[in-house]
Image (cartoon, rainbow, N blue to C red):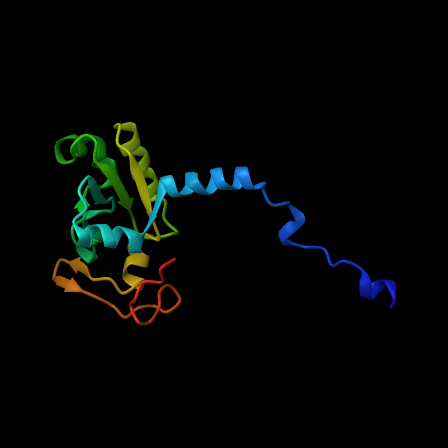
Length: 161
């Protein structure tokens, strides 16, 4: 065989080596401490889990356009003013905004952390709630869209990941 056929092809993935398992475990555990996905948030809401409140940090117009049933509406700019009277100490807050292209939920999570709450950000935001086919409320009532099969199994059964 020629040298060109046996030469190693450089790896784009490994151009920066993977972290050692100890550091990788710490990193992924930390991510899970800061984030929740829409399926897990929905499961907790349906089960009526206590000690967790879901907060939509978007504007009034966005809230009216659609929001998660059972969520509390506190626009980010009003968290410091409204949260102390609406959310009991010791409650874990899960924030969400539009979707992955918006950092509103991150800003809201920061505001809640500064108030002393444990907080997680719902990754995917309202966009992925809707794309996974979950019901949502609007100013006109409850609505629901077909499951986007790029985000969830068409059957509606959890991916169990």
